[in-house]
Image (cartoon, rainbow, N blue to C red):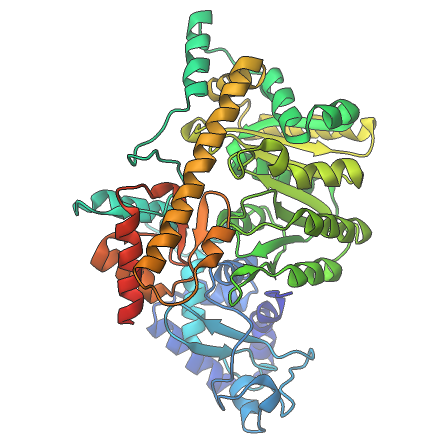
Length: 558
């Protein structure tokens, strides 16, 4: 289990060190170095004052793979158990390789340059690494800074605003759109495309739109909690009719702005009803927005290892260990199916073990269910974990549902948040809090997409048509996954690629280095996330061979 707190403690200790007059020369050196690297006085003061945004920035660095507590020592190039006394000044570790807390904390930059940065044992050694801090500064602006920074006379009311770099995936899509190369391929953004590489309006969605138009489509406000039929049918879809009927009186349900809005609303609810704030445990890697949503609400977020990069599969033992070590009454973010970005899901038996540990440890599961039915083509299979936890284990849980992927309603922002509580009273009170929060956030949610989804889910014929659409989409993605695997083998790409066909869902996790990913973009105009996550839905019979051959060429040249 990794955490940012030891590194944060190093920064927040700066004022005391300054007051005591220790390490004056070293601190001046560090300060002047940081200023030469472009740090402003206010940013230096934010670190010296122990600004909470520093903790958030560190969390984002870790989530993005920029810093990690692993790697050999920079000073002596030895593993943690082989340090010499000479390392004490360089990394703060004693000859046993342990720091003051009994563990060897390190930070590794993995963005194409293998440099290791060690956290010192104390500020007495005054070892602060400007390059690492520069990386942290890059992410400082994404920490959702809300507290104003006191300034002198300013030219603008907004002088304290820092520039926030564009979202990586949306920036990648913009770069792709500007590319004029005829064979360019976009494997970055997670949107379904048909076999011709074009957006696909599901036949069930088209039919629902026609039905709504024939009935007369008005533009009145929805209730604060959203469209009642949609809320009920969406939750019934997730839980199954039998569980829904059994638990209905214990459910608190609110329409949301797709999955992101559901996660945000869940965070607001948990912040309102849980004191002190629970920790939020997030798998690593994960969808890039998870950390930002919860840390921006003030939650302390910690990551745990989910993926074994060497085996290219879920690290289930690390998952179990992380849950056993988690603080009771904490929240755990769980991908209900089609894990993003790895495409690796637990088996049913592993899900049962995960649920058993969470119940024993009194952990609260918050499911991110963005791909129900889209993953396997079968909603019941994809919803197994949610249903098992809530019904078989009788756990309280939250479900964040999105209909962006499985209905292709990306821009309509159709989502639903539900909480399965322990009593009818708890459900009633929780729903009243959700209503208050929704009122203050968006007043009431958008109607059009919810009406489309509700029309499909409440009509047996349209629902069956939608189930067929799910099979079409998931089946095409599976065939493209196999085609990419076959193409890589045929092209002589070095290494093993079986992990591609073991994975499921919209995404594939190739396991390529950032340098190879960059080369694929620069030389072959193939766009993918920097961690080599690819949207399998972006592949089609016309480009899959080109992609496979290009990957093989890059790997054979490196």
